[in-house]
Length: 144
Image (cartoon, rainbow, N blue to C red; front, side, top):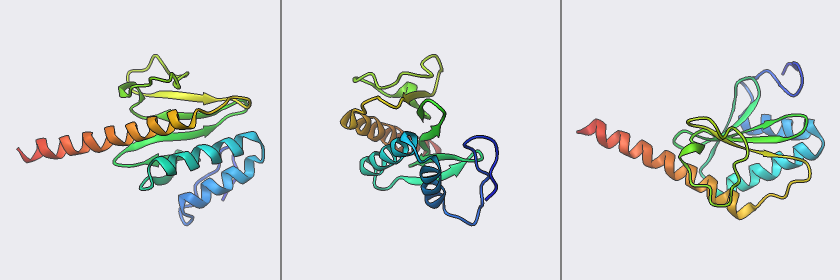
């Protein structure tokens, strides 16, 4: 695995994504690693069937019938970007970034932020439901 600028790593295709994500968490070694590990745990609890991927030269991605969200790390925050976030209800107001886009929405988690675990897991479940419903609708339309 080759180190590049900042937090990015080049992908070594022989390693599973889960191992690369483990390495990213360990490599960060600070609150961002702990936050990414916590978010990852919540994603897996919300959807035990979620698939971990490693894309775009070092971005953890969680998918189920399409991308659910990404987990990017920056100097001052961990960003969870939901691929279809604009289509999701967010009754607890977790989305605080990328609010002007037509498709995506994001949550920037800073060092001292409290994570509303129940609300985040509900958002993850809603994203999975949207993906699986969209896939089912597409398949049904194709059969007609």
